[in-house]
Image (cartoon, rainbow, N blue to C red; front, side):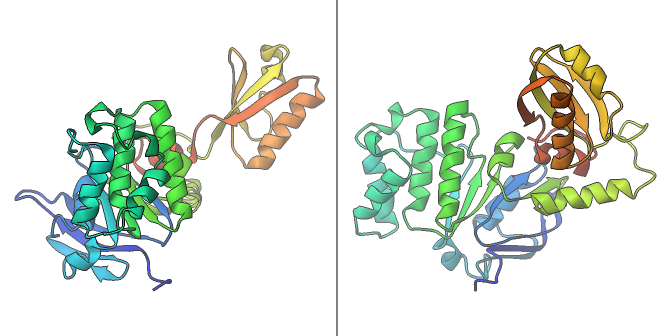
Length: 332
């Protein structure tokens, strides 16, 4: 089973009595990946996730998790998945430990050592005697993750796990997801926070109007879209006119010295399509790879400008989303 995708979706259709909300959706998620599911409201993300979680039966198509059909063998599938819904209800008048012990009993897990293990893994051991009602939103999210880990599932299905969290709580959830991946878990999560997905995901699927626009490893998708744009002479923006160059990247350069003079030195250089001065240095738009960045920095240093920092201003995932959807609106 090691060569079998953790999740395989083929020709999935669904509707709620009206027009289809899913239209021929197909994608694979390999074992051990963190897969980000992106799309606007109403695109079909939650419907797809609920089918994966065996809560909805598809109108047509086939979904397999670890080789098992979610429609034909839902009980077996439920034993190997952990599902966390967006804004899931939670029992608030019991303690954290009582909450987890209740669900351990529901899963028929006799050993209390399992509760200890998930408390430690999700870093909420110090909260075990607190009432759930007193927890912050981020702590409640970690408690929900602890709950779905009790039966040691192979696949985690998370609907908006970072929804409404403050920046610190988002970082904690992101770090927890990375740790769970290191333990061999396969994770699918939906989110509208592209920067958070870019930091943690190994592959993505973009869905719009019920159809998959693109899916696969982030680097592979970026290369495919860049090739598509470079070979399409008729590419144009959604509102008409020339298409934005989504192959271009932006770096933020912090430097010592006169930013305007540094900008003048770079204007029109090889691969550089734009230079803008900022309070701390320059925003430089360029086309190329890391070699291009090294050349830009070397050029500045050679001309006497002290470069104190360089970072990418836009993530690959943001560029992929804009190019794949034709820049017709942001994700949600």
